[in-house]
Length: 405
Image 1 (cartoon, rainbow, N blue to C red):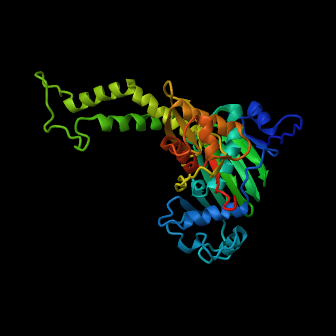
Image 2 (cartoon, rainbow, N blue to C red):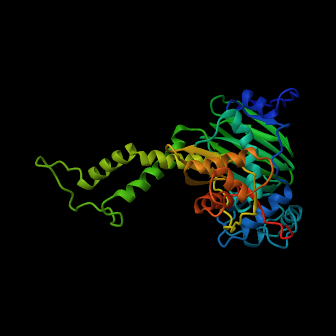
Image 3 (cartoon, rainbow, N blue to C red):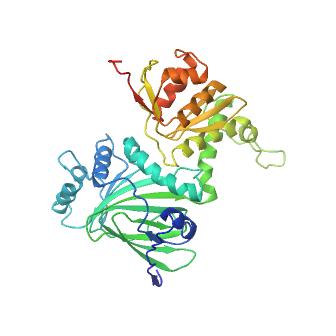
């Protein structure tokens, strides 16, 4: 690393913090934003997320690292029911004989989907920024980390992604080296601060004491969009192939031409034609549109929490719109609706009347009222199908009928 530069913290009380950040620093240079809107997660939330991740049968996304490297089997060193809070967990590891008093860092990859409340708060924080800089077309990833007296010994990070790091508690120092400048930045952040550096950067984290962070990586390279495109195309190709369950094998020995050169196997040329036809087919565009609608409703935060169980509705159940509902037209009266990372097809203008009613009414409304606004019966299977998906995606809050009314 080369010369060191410590950027000044920015304070401009006359404009919103995120807008200032987006216009001045986003994707340009490393910076600490001390007046960024709150992330919405506190140490208790972080502790609950880590407990949920550790309780999985195979907690693959959890990594416990020391100065010597990552522990292969951290076992009892992971958070457990006996750790009543994050402070208690940090204190337990400080005296753990396996660590010998050394510093440590526990990271959990994409832990938010296990808790819809935490996921939605982070989603809302990201959405506030995307409204200024644009919505991601590919998934962003989140990493929750808690550590004590830990210092990265090698530069880390994906140079193809920009980074947003919220400090939940404690203090964090990050040395960042953007590849396009060769200048090293030293960023010092405390609880409530947001740390950003653009794509094409390497970094070293340093925690002098207990510190908890949530880091979001935002892919920035054009090639980052290839995986979802290839997934969509390959999925359609598998469904259209003449023998979808037959292994792809090539003849042996490989066929040769009359002049002795190898001939391109017919199976490969057939796959090339199928690929070309699939890319040009409208179904591919629809698959990508479905993918994007889900990401847009999740502010790019993937994976999304699982949908909640179906709630049988009566005409007297009351519904209130509590999440943004994305509508993407796919035909004259057909559309895709998306909320909280979930996407489903909706048909007919009656559904649009339901959506308009939910969007414009600032208090809960009954199923019967929604039926009247759409011209449907309150027992209509079409109406209940629309409402069922809204409920499962948590786009609406449900209030059961008052038994005394």
